Every structure is written in C-alpha cells, then in structure tokens.
Amino acid sequence: MRLPDFKEARTRDIRDYKTVEFKVEDSIKDKYKGMTFHVKTYGCQMNEHDSENIKALLKTIGFTEEENYEKADLVLLNTCSIRENAHNKAFGMLGRLKHLKEERPELLIGLCGCMAQEVSVVEEILKDYKFVNFVFGTHNMHELPNIIDKAIVENKQQIEVLSRESDLVEGLPVVRANNYKAYVNIIYGCNKFCTYCIVPYTRGRERSRKKEDILKEVEELVRDGYKEVTLLGQNVNAYGKDLYDDYNLANLLEDVAKTNIPRIRFTTSHPWDFTDEMIEVIAKYPNIMSHVHLPVQSGSSKVLKLMGRRYTRESYLELFDKMKKTIPGVAISTDIIVGFPGEDEEDFKETLSLVEYCKYDNAFTFIFSTRKGTPAEKLEDNTPLKEKEDRLQRLNEVVNKYFLENNKKLEGEVLPVLVEGISSKKGMYYGYSETNKLINFSSNKDLEIGSIVPVKITASKTWSLDGELDG
Ligand code: 5AD
Ligand code: SF4
Figure 1: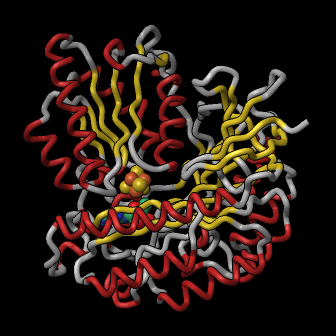
Figure 2: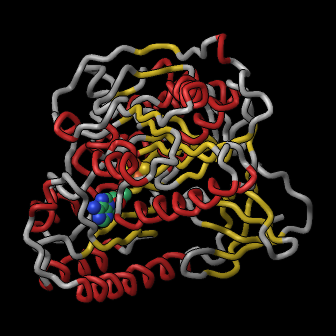
C-alpha cells in the first residue's frame, strides 16, 4: 500500500526526473481477454486525455470497452478535485456502484485521478468504501496493468498512490476519442500554488516533455490525417522552463506550426508566464488558432494578491490589450471565481467592470470552493453563501451579454469550421470555428466528419451560432 501525503505534495523543490519508455510485462499481456471496462471521466481536458491512455492500458491486458457501465466487469472513475461538486459527483457514483456490486459481487471498481491524490479521500475509501478494489494516482497511471492484476490475483484492496511525481513516461498507448482532433500533453503539473487551488498537490511540480517527443507525436498525427491538436498543460506557458535555457512555448508553438497541422490550440495559460514572443508567434502563424484562454479569476488587485496570482488588474489588462492589438481577431476566454475569502462588494464590482472592459468571448464562472490543505482554507470568509450566489448570478448576466454581443458581430461572415458531427436536428451539422465558437449549420451536401468547410453565419445566440454551408 502506498498512501498520498500532502506534506510531501506541498514541497516546492523541483526534482530530477528521467524520461522512461512504457512497457507492459509479457506475463500480463492480454491476460484478461474477455473482460470489459467502463471509464467515467470527470474534470478537465487533462483528465479526458489521461482516460484515453487509461483505456489503451486496459486494452493491453485484454479488456475491451463497454458503453453501459452497468454491464461492465470493471468500472473505473477518473476523478477531479477542483471543486466540492466534482467530489460529490464521484462519491455519488461510488454509491451507485456499491449497489451494483451487491448484485454482482465480481464487479471490479477502481478510482484514479486527482481525488486519489487527496489524503482525506483515500482515508475515506479505506474506512467506508472497502468495496473499491483499487486506487491509483496521477503519478503512476502507467502502473495500472500491474495494479489491476494484483487486485484480481490477491483479491485484496490495492491503494497505490505516489505523493510526488515519478519519472516522465513516454510511449504510453492511447485510444483517441476521435480521429480528427487530438490532445497532446506538453507539460505536467503546476508550480504556481494559487492559494485556492488543489492542482499543485494533485499533479505535482512542472515537468515538460522533451520537444522531440512532442513533435514526433504531432508529426504522427499529421500523417494519420488529424486536423487539430490541443497542446495541454496545467500551465502551458511554463513549457520548457524546467528543461531548457533557450526553448519555450513560443519556440514549441512555432515548431508545431511548421508541421502544417491545420489547427493548433493550447490550454491553459497563466497570465504571469505569457511573453511578448508567444503573442507574436500566435499572431504570425495562421494555423495557431486565434483563441487564448486567459483565466483572470478576479478583477480586484487586492483579491488577486490574496489568491497568489502574481499579477494585478493593471498588468492583466496590459497583457489583454497587447493580445487584442497584436493577434488579429483574437477571441479571449477566461475563468472567474466569485466569493473568494476577503472579496467584498467593491472587489466584486471591480470584477464586473473588468468584464465590461474585456467583453470576453467565453467565461467559466465559479463560486469559491474550499479545498482541504490549500492556504485559502485558512483565510477568514465572512460572505454568506447567498451573497456569493447573488454575485455569481450578477456576473453571469454580464458575461452572457457579451457572449451574445460578440457573436452578433459574426453574422454574415464566412468562417472555416471543423465539422465534428451531425446534431440532433435532422440535416444539421455542428463544428467549431477557429476562435472556438460552436456553430450549427445546414448543408445541401453530405460532409465528412473531420473536414474543414466554409460556413456563412446566419444567426447568433448566446452560446452558439447558426449558419449554412457556403458554396
Ligand atoms: N474554487 C472555485 N473555483 C476554482 N477553480 C480552481 N480552484 C477553485 C476553487 N477552489 C477554478 C479556477 C480555475 C478553473 C479551472 O477552476 O477559475 O481557473
Ligand atoms: Fe480537476 Fe484540476 Fe485535476 Fe483537472 S487537474 S482533473 S481540473 S483537479
């Protein structure tokens, strides 16, 4: 048994790590042929991509995928810790699985992802969720085949969580969710330690993948006909700092652009690490999409300081203006937290006024959720929940107003759209524009999923646009 330890997870030292190649042991290859799995994924794109690796790892030992979790031999929850409700969802699902296991005692249940890195969660599982067969964390996903094998062979609960990052594993197998757009990890972990955030504890310190490994992966995707890559990291703007003196996200974006993959996206960006050089590269290459997700969190410099964000309202706006000026037609989206401890009505009004200025193309808004073990847990919080809910609603009214206003400006324009599927309405396709707008559109001919087609925008809504195939 290996248990998570927050004291260790909290240490900020950057350790030496090696890059190692993944290999599944011959003795367990295809050992569980005939068994089925169902993976449920909660949380961010990083987790979605981890699940693509997890599914492929399960296939190496013979499992096949089952769409209906109630029929699967193994149900694995890939969990998220970011807010209380992510926790509640996973525990709710564990409750349902408990009943299922009463009916089918041979059912295997596993839990992994960010919640597995939390001491309190693992303690709860050890105490009250003895029916969970195995738990592993974000740092040892590659050990999954052996952990399952041990859980089955020994018929005993396996808790295998590392508190700190291990070596960086290359060559993990992957089953991608589709064959035209792909996630590519470029950096793992986060060193920023924003005071509200659990990610540095669940994902470890920043570790960049070698540029050669990333470029090889993108080149393979190009050869396989992929149209879009999203470069992933908790903070992609820190890419390379731990590995190179003279190679950073700007250089990587430029090299990825030169592979000629039609669309490049990247997420998430911390404003503190965003350099002029990066902005210039985004502006220079047409295949780097002109969309930047730039979480602001708050419009009040006082609150930003309490959050440990390392920028002020003024320096954020300076960066924002520079982007708008330099990158033609750039869409900027954001994340905002309301009700952070110490945020008063004046601070909140500063957030509203910042939103009025930035007129974001998209925004994810949240009420602050206390995370165990983070510094913000200890801050005094005098704002009642009702007041926080009221702030969220007022904020949402303003952000929504600008989503619609921005969308309206696109009416009549012809935009390139990557076709992703056919919507429930008959004959209507849907896809995303370069600036990541969802577009539902009609077409008088059959279109290939994964192709990029010109669409004329005919109507705008708050969260989507309507259009018709142009020509
Ligand atoms: N409470 C509320 N929202 C949070 N986020 C991160 N941690 C918390 C928390 N403790 C939000 C931030 C981040 C997004 C992914 O989730 O806005 O950018
Ligand atoms: Fe959730 Fe953050 Fe973990 Fe992603 S990294 S799964 S958002 S806690």
